[in-house]
Every structure is written in C-alpha cells, then in structure tokens.
Amino acid sequence: MTVERICCVGAGYVGGPTCTVIASNCPDIRVCVVDSNAERIAKWNSDELPIYEPGLDDIVRKCRGTNLFFSNNIQEEIEKADIIFISVNTPTKTFGFGKGKAADLQNLEHVARLIANYSNKSKIVVEKSTVPVRAAESINRILTANTRPGIRFDVLSNPEFLAEGTAIEDLLNPDRILIGGEETPEGKRAIQTLCSIYSKWIPREKIITTNTWSSELSKLAANAFLAQRISSINAISAICEATGADVSEVAHSIGSDTRIGAKCLKAGVGFGGSCFQKDVLNLVYLSECLNLPEVADYWVQIIEMNNFQKRRFALRIIECLFNTVTAKKIAILGFAFKKNTGDTRESPAILVCKYLLEEGAKLCIYDPKVPKQQIYTDLKSAERPDDMQLIEVTDSPYKATEGAHAIVFCTEWDEFTKLDFKQMYDKMLKPAFVFDGRKIVNVEELQSIGFHVETIGRRTSKLLKTRLNRCTSHAD
Ligand code: UDX
Ligand code: ADP
Image (cartoon, rainbow, N blue to C red; front, side, top):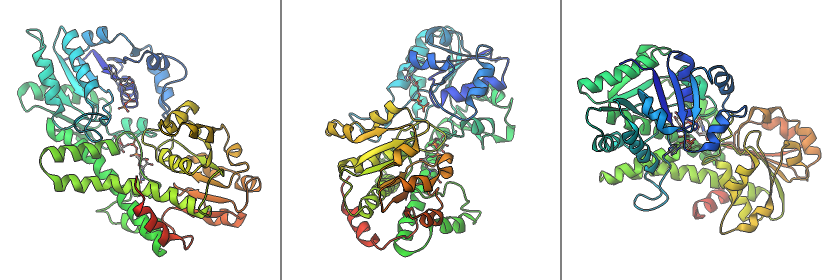
C-alpha cells in the first residue's frame, strides 16, 4: 500500500508533536492533524503554538503549509487519508462503573464512528492514545459493524512513549517503536506499511512488532514500571529523612547496578503528568476486572505512595513554619508537572498548594510556561471558593518571594538554579525557608546565605518522627 495521506485525529501533546516529526521525515506524505477544538487548531496555525515543547516551533515552521497541516475539517481529512492515527485524550473516568480508575473511552469511540461514517476506501487505523487492553478490538467491532461493502479497516496499536519536555528528541530518536497488529496476512501487511513510515528515520532493529494486545499492555506496563521506580525511590526518601541517609547517594549507588539502571530514580515531591496515574489506575481496573485482586492491590500502592509523598512534603512545610501557615505569604516556584512543559495535568504542585490553602496560606505562584488562567483553574475548588483570594500569580520569581516566609520549589526549571538567592533572602521575612521538592538547589550555598533549607530525602531537622506519624494518619 502506498501512503500518500496521513490524518491524525487529536491535536494535543501526543498528536501534534508526533505528526510534526512524521511530516518532517516523510516529505512525500501529506500529514494533517485535525481536532474538534477550533481554538486549538487556530493556535497550531499561528505563531504561538498551543503547547510548549522544546524544538517543536522550529519543525512546525519548517513543515507547516508544505506537507504538514492543521485543520478542523475532520470529515474531508478522514475521507482522503490512507492511515488515520487516533490521538484523542482518554482520561480517567469521573462517573459510573470504574469511576476513578477506568479510562473514559468516549472520545475514542466517537472517532471510530466518524471514521466508519466518513470512509469510502480501505484504511489503516492506528491507535496512538493510551487505551485499555483490548480497545483495538472495540474499535475494530465499531468499524466493521458500520462499514460500507468493499471497505476494509486494519486496526493497529502503536502506543507513543514520548515524554513531555523531551518529546521532539524522543520522537526523533526513540528507544523503540512498538507496533501491534493481527497475525493475519492483512494484519501483517498493515504492520509492514506502518513500519515503512517509521523506518524513514528509525533503524529497523528499533521497531518491535507484536500482537495487538501485547502492544496495548506494554504501554500500560511501561508507564506502571516507570511510576513504580519513582514511588520506590520516594519511599526510600522518607526513610532517608528519618535516618540520616541521603537519597541521592542511595539512588546513585543502586542505579550503578546495571540491572537497575540510573534513569527515573530521582526522588521528588511525587510524579505528575497525564499518564502515570491514569495508566496505573487503568492497570488496577483491568486486574480487578480479571478477578486478580492481589495484582490490583500491588499496583494501587504506587499511587498511594505518590499521594503520601505529596502530603508529606506539604506537612513538612507547615511543621517547619512553626505549625501554622495561616496568612503567611509562601512563594511557589514552578507549577508544571515537570520542567520544559506548560502542562499541569496531575502536577504535584496542585495538591501541595491545596494543602497550604486549606491552612490559610497566601500563595504567590510563578511558573515560566504555565498560563495564569490555568493555575487559577487548577486550584479552583467548589467547596472553598474563598481560597481564590489567597492566590496571586506573578510573572517574576523575585516578586513571588518578596515579603514571603518561604520558597517552595515544585518544578525543576533550569532557570531556578540561576536565581539570585541572596537578593531574594534580603527581601524575605526571617527566618527565611526554602523547601526544595525537586532537589535542585545547592543546600550548603543557601544555608550559607542564611536560609533554613529542607530538601527531599535528606535529614535536616529533628521534627521528622512526629511528622511521619501525623502524615500517615492524615486522610486525603
Ligand atoms: C511519561 C513516560 O515517561 C512516557 O514514556 C509516556 O509516553 C508518558 O508518560 P511524561 O509523563 O511526559 O512521560 O514525563 P516523565 O518524564 O516520565 O515524568 C513524569 C513525572 O515523573 C513528572 O512529574 C516527573 O517530574 C516525575 N519524575 C520523573 C520523578 O519524580 N523522578 C524521576 O526520576 C523521573
Ligand atoms: P494527549 O496528551 O493524549 O495528546 P490532549 O488532551 O493534549 O491529550 O489532546 C487530545 C486532543 O484530542 C484534544 O485537543 C481534544 O480536543 C481532541 N479530541 C478529543 N476528542 C475528539 C474528537 N471526538 N474529535 C476530534 N478531536 C478530539
């Protein structure tokens, strides 16, 4: 099959960068990203893209209008495409059966029905969104039940492993590409067609092909394993704080074992992002549905530990500030779930801020990339509408810290390591505190300025035993 046109439904953090990189490596293919959100498409067609991702602007500028397009005309693009990528969001369900665990698949099903309705020729449909195991089968059934005679759909699972903040690098030079499909001659042909696209810039040996379900499960398992490493090192960080061990030293020591490896072992305030929690919960739900409660309980603990870490950090702030933060100004530096993105989905900063707001703290928040309105939206609470008056969002870290009792680092932005801490210290109330949730500051340097510094996974005071006890008994 010759591929002349690719259509991607969903112009988000996955669809946008993925198609940009495909377009830049496949000049002979017309790639169009469509979305039901007209405002989002308008932004993709403007000078200010809807997402911040290092290196993305340059490639979009190079390809847009040549072989890369962003459009609201979903029908036309689906009709003409040879391959359709589905990259819509599949958030955790907030209602009904599986509420709080299962993935909400309504967007996915909606797109499957659009594809069935608008297609007048055979196509390969590629599931890129993270989905529960056997979602491809559901898509297949919807497509075949609604297809006109003579039209054939081959559904492939091709999960995306990019991480935000390094998406372009990850897409250009991935550890692997995973393609799952049916083991029939037609299924194998479809897999080969998709392989031929990726192999334009990715060595063949990095392309793994499996059956559909292995591919779907591999995505969930990969995210669960990564999340598990972070929860494991964060669990160790609590022990370090209580004993005098240093979590960075422990991480280095264990990471030097090639069987364990050094990556994804950075202790911090907890993991965030749209994937880890969602996918672990998805795995929990799958295990429950398969009547494997022990397996479900095992994975649930990863999330429990992550919540414990966020709670523990917030409590450490309150305890160090003499057990009261009411009416105290606290500077929150960083609100995104990690550096080099403006994305705040499941950002640990949200929960830390909410704990502090519940105690009546006045927060002054700075993040270099998160839009002001997004911060207000994330912190809005129906039960506590007055909290909004306690929040200020500023465009300067120096304004945020002026007159504050404490600085709290929630994101590891590079610019935070270059701040003039002496200048900040001089304009803060004393004693001035720094709470480093991302282990980015030089503790000794800040202590020599006069700051009281608290960091993750390193003992700095004697309050810890009581803190751990209180933390464990605090209900979410
Ligand atoms: C993740 C997976 O890495 C990616 O393969 C998948 O496609 C989507 O989910 P992402 O959520 O974008 O990517 O970012 P990632 O770099 O994995 O970080 C997730 C969270 O874990 C962030 O909050 C980050 O700060 C935190 N983290 C990461 C740690 O706390 N410690 C680490 O060592 C690594
Ligand atoms: P991800 O991080 O998985 O890429 P995003 O939320 O960033 O998730 O992007 C998903 C995109 O999918 C959004 O821009 C959303 O508007 C789009 N989308 C969701 N449902 C549909 C649909 N039925 N038709 C077209 N676009 C959709």
